[in-house]
Image (cartoon, rainbow, N blue to C red; front, top):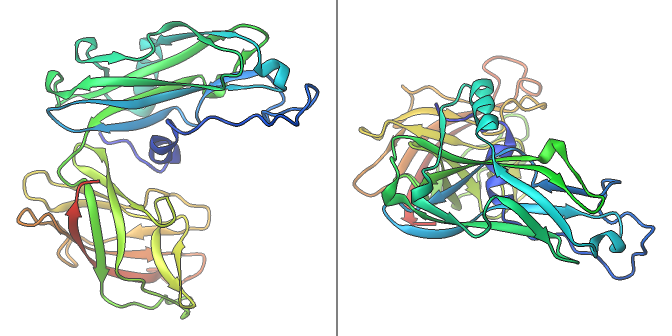
Length: 320
């Protein structure tokens, strides 16, 4: 099954895992906490699951996961620290059981890593280490869901392992045919709860692969998974609301639409009816048509709680 991406770690972490390391400023003394955690710790980025996508039938090198050193002081940051890193198959089995998933370990013959599991060393002043993978997707069975389950088990020089962020399961996922850049247009609309909020067309969305036949739409302006709007004549976006689509791989029909943020505390969510609108990926030009609703029961208390009904056309403009 395709993982639900309402755990934002599964959607946002794919962007953050290869982020930059924190900066230690020279004006901070040894007695000041520069890590913000109150302890010297070694960790992965937030969240235990992430996705890194690859081009099918190609050999590519990409950043896979980053290990961070959080230091209380400059003195601690100047220490050499050794960290024990492994591929934890037992943790993967436990994750599969807990989440009802069927991920399998990536075939070692299909990849090489820039940093091999075992003992790795942070040099004095080094705050982050990114593990890069060179993957030959032509050597893997694309019918399986491949991951690498990295685990940090120990650290030296007075650093401890942040247990909450000690596991990073990274799925190596080939980009599907729905992935790409789209220009979005649609029918005009006015928010039923606030007439100052109206449509903002056209805008650009990146469609990011989240599964074999699913994508999530990324707002390139705000840098997250939002739906753009015009608020008082200025560009804005609905927070805690976005669109993820799953397709029938043979017909291109949309079989599921949902918000990647659901469930949201402010009750914002997405509903749709497959019989309303076209709801189709068009093989002839790669475009997508979809119809769906933005609901918020806490604001529009009368069922079906619709604030906006969207009827949109997404014109494919090229790869990401």
